[in-house]
Amino acid sequence: MQTLSVKTDRRTQLVDVTAQVQKAVASSGVATGICYLYVPHTTAAITINECADPDVARDVEGALDRLVPATGPYRHREGNSDSHVKAVLIGASQFVHVEGGKLVLGRWQGVFFCEFDGPRDRRLQVKVVTD
Ligand code: ZN
Image (cartoon, rainbow, N blue to C red; front, side):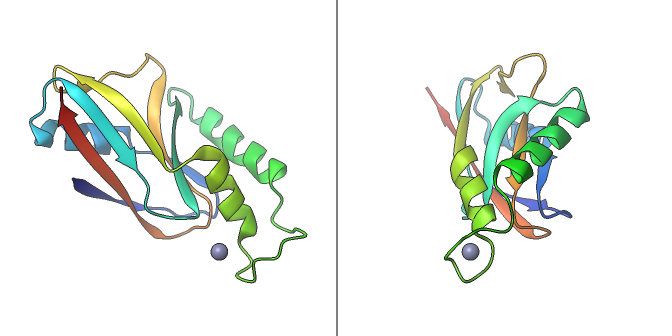
């Protein structure tokens, strides 16, 4: 398993990590298999969506902020329940097929680390297995 570092600079932020993940796939030496992605945090997540137009990621950030307001009513005393709820909605893992040593993504797709309680220094775990 490889652990990638992701630095975020906003409270809610989708960070395009496609190039970083592709680099990890290349260094794994696996030509054909599956790339598993896992986020070991409770207020961050991982998703795959359009990376061609950066406004799409910004729109997703805005929609999630409107969908899950920062102010509750919430019980969790840390004051970041909205961050936890957003992480639950998006999820902590994804997988992408690997062929020819490369991620098999759709033409407009990219891999996004989703920060919901930034800015922070985060980790993304990558495991590439051969089949
Ligand atoms: Zn919390």
